[in-house]
Each structure stands twice: as C-alpha cells, then as structure tokens.
Image 1 (tube, rainbow, N blue to C red):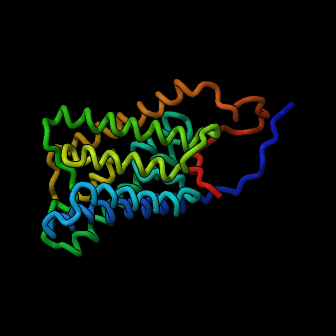
Image 2 (image 1 turned 180 degrees about the vertical axis):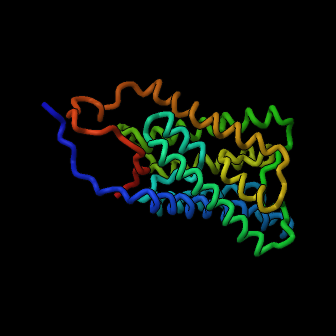
Image 3 (image 1 turned 120 degrees about the vertical axis):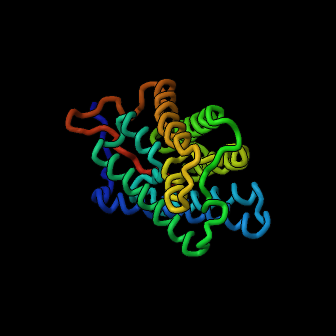
Amino acid sequence: MERVVPDTPARPVLWRRAVGEAIGTGMLVFGGCGAIVTNTVHAGTLGTVGIALAFFLVLLAAISALSHISGAHFNPGVSLAFLVARHLPARDCLAYIVAQLAGATGAALLLHAVWPTNPAHLGATIPTVADMRAVVVELVLTAILMFVIMSVATDTRAVGAPAALAIAAVVGAAALAFGPVTGASLNTARSFGPALVSGDWQSFWIYIVGPMVGAPVGALLYQLIRGEHPSHRHLDTTEVDDGDRPVRLPA
C-alpha cells in the first residue's frame, strides 16, 4: 500500500525565502554582535553569560519567526550541509548563502551606524588560541550544531524539545563555553559581516574552514546513524524527496 502524503502549504518562492534568510541572519548579527559591542562599551556589564544569552534568545526568536518561510538556516555552513545531504537544491543553496552574507553585512553596517568607532571590531571573531586549535574548535562546534539540526529539523521521529529551542541552545552553549576562545562563530556569515565593516580580517580563514567543513560533517554523521527514514518507505514514484524542510515547531 502506498503511503498517503498529507497536503502541505506551498513553499514561498525562492526570492522570498532568500529575503527571510537575510533578515534572520541580520537579526543574529545585530542582536548577538550588538551584545558583544555593548559589553565592551559598558565595561563588561553583560559578560560571557550575557552575550551567550543574547545569541540564544535572538536565534530562538529568528527561527520561530522565519522557519516556515525559509527553513531558518541563517548560516552558509548549514545551507551547504543541506545541499550535501540532498535536502537543498544547488540554486537555492547559492541564493541562501548570498542572502546570509548580505544580511550579516547589513546588520554590521547598522552596528557601525550606532558605534562609528567600531568598538570590539563590531563583534568580529578573533581567536585567543593558535589558529589551528581555533579551527578545530569551530569545526567540532559546527558539526555538533548541524548534527542537532539534522535531528530536530529533518527527522520526523525526533521528539522532545522544540527544534528552535534545541538549535538555539547549541549556539548559546557554544558561546558560553568557547566564546572567549574563538568567538564561537559556527557561522561564516556571522563572522563575515563584522569583519567586512570593521576591516578586521585577522584569522578570518578559520571561520570559513571551520563552519563550512564542520556542518557537512555533522549532517553526514547524523545520516550515518539515523538509518532508513520512515518517510522514505513505500513512496509513490511521483513523490519527491524531502527538500529543505522548515524547522518543525510546535503548533
């Protein structure tokens, strides 16, 4: 017997999804990097815990607001990982990455408008350990993030904490534990915007290699252990594969 597939709302066209990605990435940079700048300007009033909380809350809000529009990637590594895992077409992946970089740059420009002297390099990620150690940290953290995303956002068997909360928790925990070490970027766009606007490209290659390699590793690792996905059983030949599923949120 063939599985009956329930009707689902049509996804927005690509340009609308790309705009959603730009907005969400901009929210992440403006809120999270803004907290870093505020902490510097106001003599450590937020501290590492406050900065981590800011990243957690703004990402939680952005995913909740935009997951049904674009899938809430907000991260070039995540989009690349979905491409590698065959959840995202190449054209969409390219559009998403361009939009994410644009959104991060726009948010960094807004931070520059608020603080023209670019305190804290507008939240640019600068490692405090040797570059090779830093790239390992970024790679591992991004792999963990993508592993969680693959579970809660693509596997219908996953139950428990809402997807937005689980994903934001990984980013917040990374910022709390490793923010003082590498900046806990896990996101090339998040590092790109502040670096471009502040002009500080110190060790920027870390935040390309770490997230862009780590995210596909995390995605492939989850696919390795997940086994056959229930939705792939007894599919009609006219059905298409998952595509890039939006993050699943509670009704």
